[in-house]
Length: 126
Image (cartoon, rainbow, N blue to C red; front, top):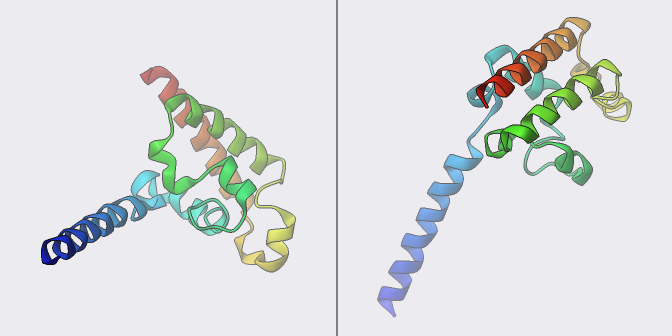
């Protein structure tokens, strides 16, 4: 009985350690600093693990970016820029409640410039 309890505790601690490493990934560790700041400010509320919007999570989860295949990343990069340029992201409904999360034109340009460069980099690497 005592051995079972010890194994359960060891297993639980191992699981917590594993989860802390995986859930600890943030925009500043995965993306360039300035891009991570934009994503954190305007995208993370809906597009990271634990967000309420299932549709947003199906579209992209930025905290899982490193887990995506290269081909998926390339496709998402184009979609991200397109949605931002068309004013679909962040959505108007979201911005009604959090107007401070609206991207400036400079941030939109910076994000789209990065998505294009990153997409090219990923294509050349494969």
